[in-house]
Length: 350
Image (cartoon, rainbow, N blue to C red; front, side, top):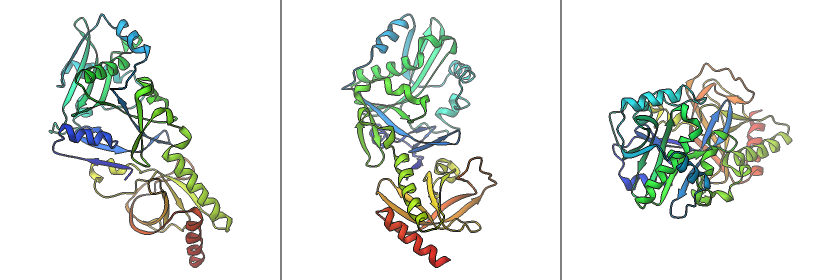
């Protein structure tokens, strides 16, 4: 699945290592994974990152930040949310241009009474004034950097990046192997700062084979989303050569499996689908998907879990129904083979 969430009662350090290595990350008191994102009606690939701390060579920026912020006091300790941190987080939220949680309590616990992670906090003080805080989760050999926030009045001190370096130094002293800063999003610059933390030791997880590769081998033209777009466009062109009409749609609810109330329903989690059959009430049948892991096309029947009051703002966006794929009809390794299946079926329908 491209988007999943789990709600374990507890995660021991070794389990967290395994989750992180598989591209999972904390969400409140749950753990989730996703491979695609949508910002302002644009779809993107989400690529998980990690830094091999044994091989890390940090940029000159790190030494400059340590010198710039040398007058500040730093404390690192087991995490426990305090009112002063909530106040700082609220001030930080009022100055940022992207969406985040409404409070630290929501960010770290999301209204849950559980506490399943071994969380630590790093606090930076200007004398008695708290000016920056970051949270991170410790595994047995790994660490996940969860969040960083700071007083906007100290923006010139690059406290967000400073907190990241403080976390990694703490992990290096404990002998940990990997630091996981979350994902970055090719084509969406908000997350690009993570790429400069330790380039020579930075790796990304390729969902297609579940392997980690040096970031130096990454190409923005070779992401899972780009591959899906190219293969479905190839199939669409072959179908239209026969005189049949088809269209590739962006599916609005590809991440619906991450909604707690929908968890476990096995909803459609592909960002793109090809539609070439007549839509029927409460269903859209069949649809063609491209599986980037198995490298083949799939023909599916879907039914509607919910009918949405939806009007597309952009052409070829689909959101009329929340879809559940309930029957796999056929898989084909090539676009030519799937085009043959589809066009034959369309002729029979006509």
